[in-house]
Length: 126
Length: 162
Image (cartoon, rainbow over all chains, first blue to last red; front, side, top):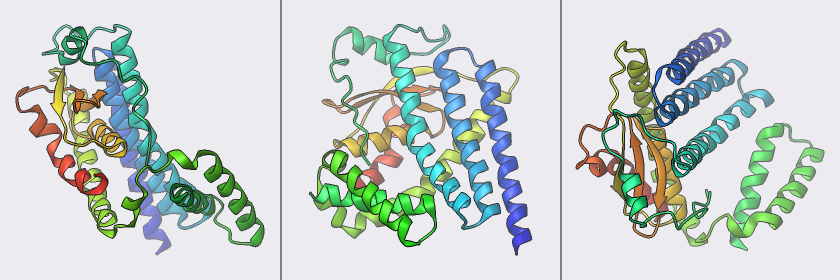
């Protein structure tokens, strides 16, 4: 039984490493900040969660295993928020989108002044 | 007050998970720490405490978790494909989508879910008018963006948080 847990844990850790690798590759290959955030946020979050879940499977319900589970929850709650903060801050401070981008509705609505007056109102409540 | 009690219970549970040993010293320190946290930050934890009492919301939240994990998995396959492809098949753009959610928690969860699902990353939220600005890595259909991005989560999150 223990053996099966070890093997599935190893599989999860392998899958996590695979996605982490693609996240880092995306960080190098994609053209602008927003696309890089896409790759890094999604792949690195899911990959790291998978590694932590594999750790939990291998350790079982011990102190370290439960800590790994809690780390998954905190990571899922905080990683998108930090990505959102980075993207918003970059856009406000004037980082341009890639030149082949299709549209930028945020820029046009900022110009007309319908947004930008709700700074800091996105409270984190769970 | 009810918000403080809810935060106390949650903080105590997290503490017990972190320690994972149940002798009286750990429990005692956990109660002290949870009391302190509930006293300091309890008033901004939940605004509408009556929502915590309806069991239907917990049921919908449990239904939401596997859906979210599945979408997250699809997102990763999608991004890995786009990154690994030699031609980089991306077509990025920032689109504006409309949401019916009004509460802070609902909007936060919607924005987080959008960030972790296929090809989308929430950039900003306009709470007064209910708009989300979303960076879309493959902006194939700008008119139907609301339907494609928001709807599958919105109908569940509405049942949980509104």
